[in-house]
Image 1 (cartoon, protein in one colour):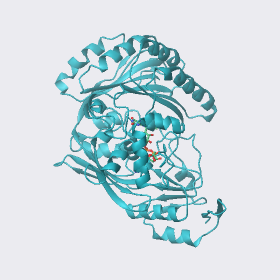
Image 2 (cartoon, protein in one colour):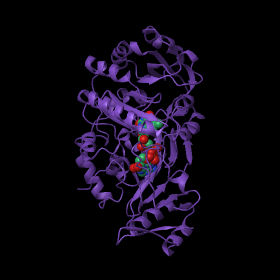
Image 3 (tube, protein in one colour):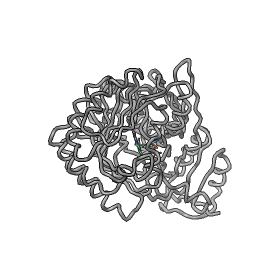
Image 4 (cartoon, helix red, strand yellow):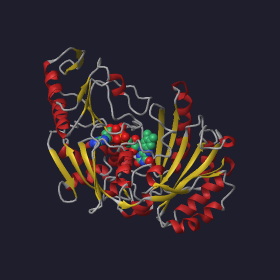
Length: 472
Ligand SMILES: Cc1cc2nc3c(=O)[nH]c(=O)nc-3n(C[C@H](O)[C@H](O)[C@H](O)COP(=O)(O)OP(=O)(O)OC[C@H]3O[C@@H](n4cnc5c(N)ncnc54)[C@H](O)[C@@H]3O)c2cc1C
């Protein structure tokens, strides 16, 4: 068996069986996977197939003790560390070349406390795991729109999805984290204990340590009135203008994200519509079901809908509705921005670039981040853009690497055209590796405080494979 050891003096990677590595391997309850091991090729892959990195070691942690041991081992041997939750990060920040990956994907324990209305979730859970567990109690906590996304990365960056307008961002429902810090210490952070760290992890990403468990508030959500309504592409301007004015004044029970997209080429979509470029809104109404029809009345009068798939469904079914369109292993490139206003000029540009979606999985989404998310101040958590109306993301995606050039060019061109109409920064969870300036623009005046917290909890920047907050 080949095992890679790091010779830090020469900054070289030597393939050998090293005594220290054997000791490390034996001390774990989980699995250490190295180049040459059978599982290595599959274990090193992340969700975005455009990312092709070769870590020196992947530790599939079984428990907190394995996380502590991995952090200490990497620190002692000066090995770069990446943290892997659900591996969905577009920039591939769950992995690295030649470093050690702390893979949490086997740490998926969940405990719902129905009396306290909370759920405690281990660091490697996906949102599908959480929705499954909480739905049994008629409850949910805000997450995203795809069930295979990791709780870890999504939450630590903010977390926006179908429940944002009603219950806020994922971080607005985060009550506490357990963390392993760079020095191997295990700490708790909540409103009373390590409150600075609690502030920083609510938007500051994986910069401060490995979160081994999250405690979320639960909200009553069970059957929702939800799904997409699609309109012809040539009605985009009309639908977008309606959406802009309607959603910003709609009751918080109603969430709806706007999409420019192509109808998927299979069931349940009618054959006549398959592969047609369209615009759509994916709705989620969490109010009383008997009121749903009246809430949707003005929406259903708009334009000439091609398809109306909105109706009562279990919340976990909405959460996993798009999983099949975006399985792991596709090539992803995305660009993002926060948006305060959707002017008629910006809409005209959306119409122009939306008409050029280069492959059927390419898309543009506008996620509303108002309603309950606006009730938290811009300095109350590390997530800064509290006044923004939408998070925009332009996604170039396709299975075939041969199409990368055209999907990337389309996403860049589209983003460059719309960026002047944006609020400046972007949602860090929907950024590629775009440099410090972009990271600072996304945290604005919270960046300084983030560097102070970073200096206190991770002064050597041990956790640097992320949208990095530099401790200086
Ligand atoms: C198909 C798809 C759909 C998405 N939908 C949404 C959406 O609806 N809403 C939304 O807000 N975002 C969404 N995202 C973006 C998503 O929030 C980010 O990609 C996020 O990084 C994914 O988290 P993860 O745990 O799966 O990622 P990973 O790639 O595993 O981790 C990303 C980074 O998060 C940090 N991290 C992860 N887990 C931990 C942990 N336990 N402790 C410390 N640090 C950790 C690390 O720094 C790591 O580099 C989506 C992404 C994809 C690909």
